[in-house]
Length: 152
Picture 1 (cartoon, rainbow, N blue to C red):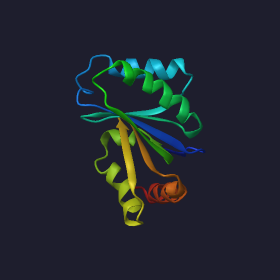
Picture 2: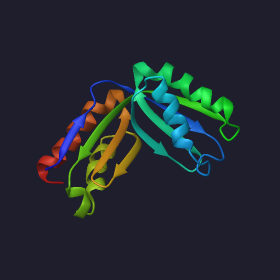
Picture 3: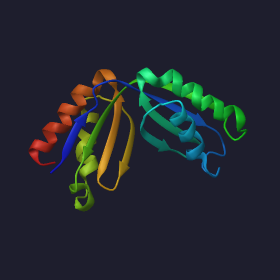
Picture 4: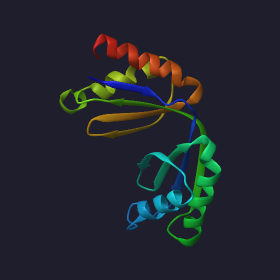
């Protein structure tokens, strides 16, 4: 059975960039430890070739930026921190993801058709986390929920 949730408050994404993000040993521990020491809860982490993004409660974004900035200041491998606020988070979890090709497409297609921009997607073995503008989050949630009622 699929579980669908819309997080109740907006999030912020803080993205650390640098040419050596992917090849720096312990990079996640360095930033995660700094966020933990600042009592910032991280809802999701996404990595790219040259970036690492941390999704936190929007109310914690200043503490998170300060904590990440301390690490960036000590490491020449990192160049900057970008901030994106007012993000909605929708999570979908269930064993159906394991053996059902097209599940991700079934979620995203109606959202895209309605003109909602997907800011980021994070996936794991049995779940998907979808990030959209906060003002579009309720509509995106309802579109995905409607797809589930149809059986994706």
